[in-house]
Image (tube, rainbow, N blue to C red; front, side, top):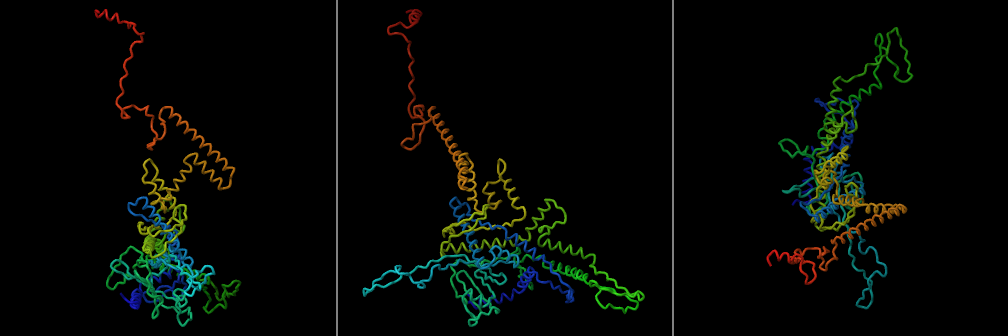
Length: 640
């Protein structure tokens, strides 16, 4: 393993080797800051615009501002899903989602206190301008109690200890310091971040930054230059992290010794923008184009645009003091003053053919307008069309406008993918560190990315990060009319006798809601409030009471009692009818099997008994000893 001095030497060597990449990145930043255009050198090594007016277009800044706006306003949707997870696993995953949202919210709160942009804005800026992202991600554990011995305890709060001599002595009990853990995410300039790769990814990262003595004192408490604070002189500092330790050093001075960070992984997230893999060729420096910025297809176009506009600006400026043609017979007549000033007078001798006429203005060649149109079209295809800024030269159909809006996604597609990977990498670093158990349990607050923007406050157990699924992040830029299109598509999915998808899929994949389970519970609660007249009356009564409209609450309370009374009467009538037809049983048996039908109304075979005995046929209704009617006649017929 290299020493600290060897690591610093490697970084310095890489800095020299990456000079072409650094020049490209510095030029892109100057282009966004609208550095004054100075012209360009022709094949003879001369600048055609020397001693002429130069114009700087603001297209480079406005286009990137629009890209940053679309990316900065896009919601960051954090998902945690474990394949085939059951209900309990889904609740664990939901809690892990809240942990991710809470970490990012806490990091943004800390960054705001340090006068830094939000994490999303910082990642957007790095990906758009540098073509790379680089963030140092740490969980910091700090003491929240006063160090022991700094403050004396009041009498009565100490323990009385009896010594060998029988004298009492005041002695304080040892104090256990309490700690708290917070999230600290710092921006590292990708230009000056150097990654050391291993067989399975990065094994160490070092960041080189120039800092003054005052900044070094504020960050690491080290005083330089014999206690003086020279705010002008800058010193090269090297901040290093691997999977176990971190240190900060400068040439000949240690600012922070090797310290275990306890994160369980390299606490630095680095990503590169673009779809192109790394290529190599002898004599070619492809690294200068590895991780391209937003301007990768319009750098030369902006220079050509500034060149043409500079010529127009020069021609326009000459119209203020337009040249004069002074005529005379022998050509010796000159003007004593500037006759273009307001109120100027001039005497002309007509006999000498004296006259003063304005010179014809200089005009650009006729093909210049066509060329400028081609350049403007190239700039729009490389960034955003003019319609993105509301500029429509003529009336367009709704379909054409929709097609133009879809073209707005292409320039920011690669940066959005990179920022998505950066958020996922940051959350994985924090999740890995939290699952180690090296840090305190955190109570996190934040706001979910659902329709209601629900706030939450949750204590996150360490087991949640150990048992939860994997973090997944999705960033969807909100283009014009996206919300209306999503709602229309959602309705299309659930309409009809056979829906195309279930409500959970529609809420999560189309409407991009954060906590789908909570939304479903809220919808069911809303349906429960209006699902029956009694529930509706009860909800209205509570709402009126909360608004202190007690007269209206009394009306709804009466309505609720009326509905409940009607329900009780209806239930009593049903029970009475059931009892009359023999369905209502005598009650619940002692074995707890529930009430059933009356056994007397059930056939014996169903109760386990044999078939019933047949009922004998009844005889004639005659007094005892009397002859049965027709008996004698029957006997005579038989010969008796």
